[in-house]
Amino acid sequence: MLTGLTGAGAVLAGSALLALRRRRQAQFRARRPGRTIAVPETAIVPVEKTITAIGSTSAPTVEQMDTLLRQLAANITNSNLTMPALAAVELGGTQIVLHLSAPCALPDPWDGTADQLHWATQVGPAVGDGRREPTGALPTPGHDRCRRH
Image 1 (cartoon, rainbow, N blue to C red):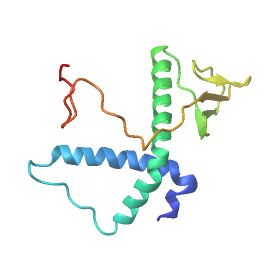
Image 2: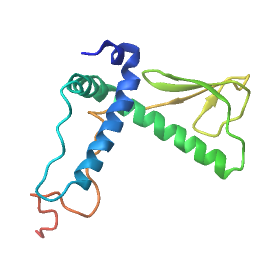
Image 3: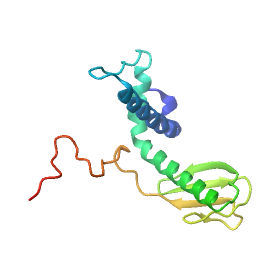
Image 4: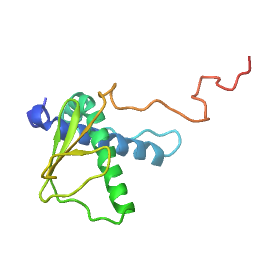
């Protein structure tokens, strides 16, 4: 287990796991029919195991933080406002706090302090390993969602 990706490095491990998942999906899409993706090098296996073990617990939090920050950026851009000067992001068990370098007003769902330097919003508990259940009209292989009763 790589100690740099545990404890305070869990957010890094969660981010790395999300990137690893995207890379694996791209590899599977790009492979030729009947082929598999390449096995990682022996030196990389411990890194991948650590990322998977530690990152699976923090990946949902990283996804929530990413979604909130993207929504904030979209709201500010749509309002033709200037992006706030972000100094730090604090991840808590139930909230995310943005620490700004300069005072700035943020839209809902952000609640700010009187000096407009610290903004927080509540987040839901992380569920599962961050994978989303399939949704949409296409059935999952092996399941008959179109069967009439």
